[in-house]
Length: 151
Image (tube, rainbow, N blue to C red; front, side, top):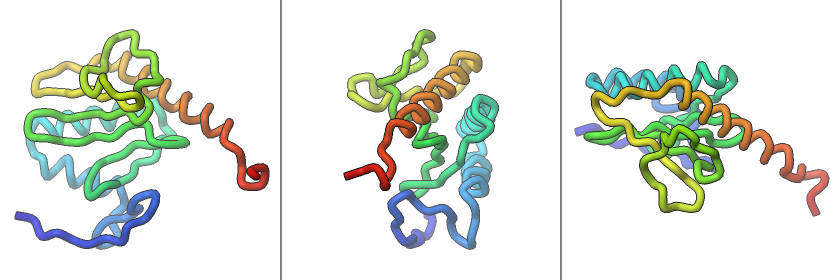
């Protein structure tokens, strides 16, 4: 059993982990720690996210969830016993012509892709979905009032 560590809670989530590790280092450690198909799947997903959006920012939030952001959260990469779950923060607002979303379909905001052992990722469709999430985030960020203009 792992020893729990306490971290100060920040609005945007911790930028570093224990011993000053960066979010990218923490994600590396999670992939290595899994040491099975889930680590390989999370690593593959991470690679595809970085290929789809070279400007993506890796974060580590909610006590150990890899998060990829660009002008807002794109998606998370949670790992469970039998699934690696990519949850898209604004997935309900995204077109999904390849029907990648297969989980959390009932919500009004999020949508998820559950990846199981042996699943083959439709890389082209996933990259398109990631780019669509980035485009949505950047368009919404452009519409947000700045502090100078807000009343």
